[in-house]
Image (cartoon, rainbow, N blue to C red):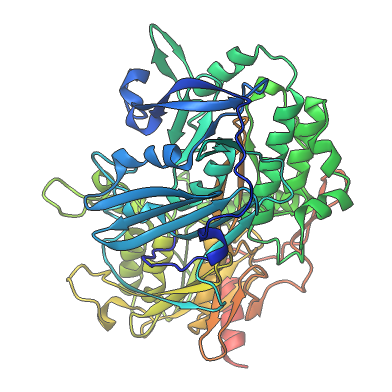
Length: 612
C-alpha cells in the first residue's frame, strides 16, 4: 500500500532558484528517435502486437561513444505519463538555470512536486504520482474494487521532521548530464529510479525502444509480436549486444544505479546503522567488485550486496543474462534457516491437520480441542480476489469467495466457529504466513477488537511522516460498521507465530498484541517495511525493503517504533532457541517443540496462562 497524500510541498530555495554557475554548452552528444511502449496495454492480450502498446516517440540524447545510456529532459520523461492521468490533472516541467522542476496538480491542488539539481547531485520529491493516475479501463493498473469492500478507513498524517519532502542524493554515483542550450538531459536510470516508487511505473531502455510497465517482475519476459516474429524486452536487449562484454561506461552506470537505490531507498539502512552505503560496501569488500570487468564477479557482488542483510524482502530477484551478470551469491544463514523451517513446519502442520484424511488441509479449516473450548485455523497470506472471483454478476457475493479473498475467509470461518457455543478461545495460526496485501490487514484487525476499531501506522522514513489508518469492517454485510461485526467480545483470540511469520504475517500479531490479543509460539520473523522494486538499467531488478515502515506510533511522545524485531510471545513455546538453525553448509538443526500444531496441547497452554 502506498501512502496517499495530496500536499503542496515547499522545496528548498536553493534548488528552485537560478544557478550562478556558468552556462555550459555540451555538444558532444548524438540524437536518436525511439518508440515508447507501455506494455500494460498489451499484457493481457492473447496475441499481443507491440504496435498496440506504443504511446509516443521521443528524441533521446547519447554521449558520443555511449550508445547504451539514453539521456532525456525531465519534460520528456514526464510526458510518458500524460496518457494515463485522471481528468483535471496538469503536469508541468520548468527549467531554471541548472534546476529542473516537475509539478502535478489536479483541479488546482498540488499532488506532486519534484526538483533535480545536477550540480548538487540531489533529487527532491514530495507527494505521489500514483494518486493521479487512472485505474481500470484507459488506465495503467486495474481498479482495486474488492479491496475496498467491507471496510471504512480514515487516514491522518503527522510530520515528525522539519521537512515534508524527501531528499535523495547521488553524490556517490557516476550519473552525468548533458547541457544543450537551456535544456538539461538526465540519464534515464536516474529519472526512473527516482520516480518509479512514487508512480508504480517502471521505464527501461533495451537499446532499441523505451519500455514501461507497472509489472516490473515480469515485463522483461513478456512475449509480443514485433512484426511477424515473437520477441521480448530482454530478447531484444540480448540481440542488440550479441553477448559481448559490458563496456566500462555502462558498468559504471549500472553500479551507480545500484548504489543510488541502496543509499536512498533501502528502508532498513538506518536499522542496520549504516550511514553511507558506498563505505559499507567498501568495508565488506564488495564495492570494487561492482566495477569488475568480469560479468560473473559483478553479478555475484550485486547479489551478495543484498543477501548480506538477511532480509526476506530484499534480493536480486531477476537478471537479464545479456551481459552475463546472472551469477548468484548464496542466501544468508537467516534466510536459509527460515526457508528450512518453512519446509519442516509445512510438513508437520499437514500431518496434524490432515490426520487420517485424504483431503489436503486448506486455509480456514478448523480444528477443535477435545473439550471444544478452543478452535484453531490457519491462513498463509493476506490476499484479495478480483471482482469476478468474489462477486456474481448481480453484485452478490459468490459462495466460494473465501478461496480467493482472506476477508471472506475470516467471514466464513468465524461464523462457523460461532455456531459452537462452547468455544471460548480462537487460535489464528499465522506461523507460515509470509505476508501479502496491507489493505487486507487493515480489514482484518477490527474483527479481533471489541468495538470494531483498529489502527495501523506507517512511517515514511525519507520525509519523516507518520500515516495512521483507522478502520472498521462490515463482516456481516449489513452495511453497518458496529460492534456486531467484531468478535473480540465473543472470543479470546490467540495468534500462533513462528520465525516464518513475516511482513504482514509479522505486522498482524504485532498490531493484534497492542489490541490485547495474546501471542503464542515463537517470536515472529520481522519484515516491517513495505516492499519496493527498482529496475536497474541492464534489466535486472532489485526487490527490497522500502522507506515505508509498519510499526507503533506514540502520538504524545511523537515516537515511532518499527516491527522489525517481531512480536514477542505472551505464551512462548520455545526457550528462546530458534526453531531452526543452519551450519555453514546450510544443514538445518530443528528445535521445534512437540505439540506446536496440536490444538489440545495449545489449549492446555492457554489454560495454564489464564490461571496464572
